[in-house]
Amino acid sequence: MPTIILVLIVGSFAVLLFDTIGSIASRQFRFRYASLAIVSWILWLGTGFFAAWYGQLYLSLLAGGIVAFVEATLGWYISCLIGPGRPKNKLSRIAIGKIVLIVTMKGAALGFIGGLSAETILGK
Image (cartoon, rainbow, N blue to C red; front, side, top):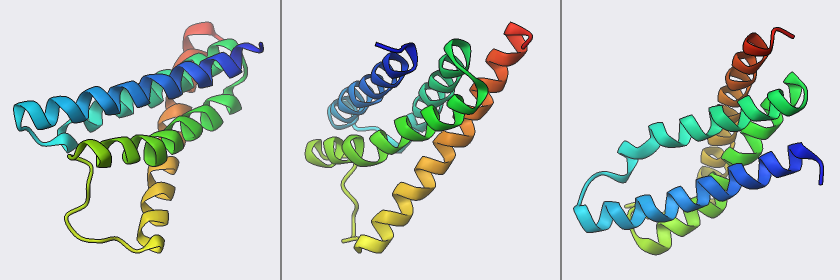
């Protein structure tokens, strides 16, 4: 299995596990689920870092975006099922699409920043 695929699998699994545990903790300890966003950003950065470390810089952009997309779709679905990710008001499909697009773009940008960090360390 190519290493970049493994990076994507690990990154996707990590964000889904985080969304599950974070949602449960948010309900149990009654804190704002949104306050955990920084952890998502770190996971996107890390995915981009390792994508560039094991591959090329452009892969960091792609990897960060893919993992963020997984979080914005499956991760959001998990948090909605558990409770804290459920929107207060009903959202239209267009609004949901816009949110997913924005999250994916943020993930791609942070993944690229992570990739730049890897490139700096490696001196490529």
